[in-house]
Image 1 (cartoon, rainbow, N blue to C red):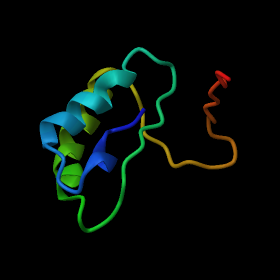
Image 2 (cartoon, helix red, strand yellow; image 1 turned 180 degrees about the vertical axis):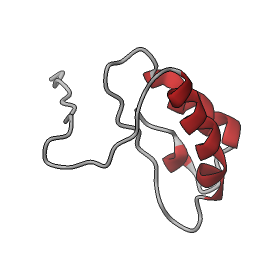
Image 3 (cartoon, rainbow, N blue to C red; image 1 turned 90 degrees about the horizontal axis):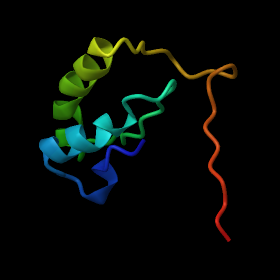
Length: 76
């Protein structure tokens, strides 16, 4: 799931939260967020996003070689 934070350095926190919630209902969610000093609104959105997924029963784990790896089909 893309948090949409790549669309600009200061995407509105509400946009990042809304886009990050689109993974609800999936068994596994890998949420793409960017980690740079310019992404201040990404950091601001994190507590709400974490609480949202915890309330739905999701857990947070570090990625390792045994982690779920999403694969997308090709439409050519």
